[in-house]
Length: 173
Image (cartoon, rainbow, N blue to C red; front, side, top):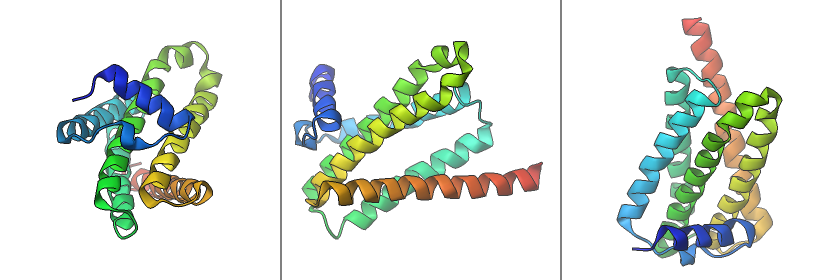
């Protein structure tokens, strides 16, 4: 199993230097722990940073994880299994790191309430860049196509969350 320092260096290379997710060796335990950590950090971020209700948190976790696995299912016909496993593991680690960054930014946002949107946009763009690099690796496609697919998935999940949230507010509000 890789050390956390080795994984963080590989993560830096994937996100900022367009490196390959092959630097993080695939491990079932790492995949499971990154999925659990991503869910926990997302729950904490949504509760403490964005002040979401528990229903909204559950809805967003369901949509996010379902969207992630739907994207992986759509990639299975274009990507070899080995590349797909590495890409999924790297995406989960990137999402976990993004949620951790947002959680660590909670005190800053508490002091400066106007900084919520810029912090969210910066961390979101960094995560989309890293996920786009993982999709590019999995598909062996162009960078623009991978980033476009990643952005389309993020927009689709955001729109679906918005619609379902408004429906829930109509029913329970």
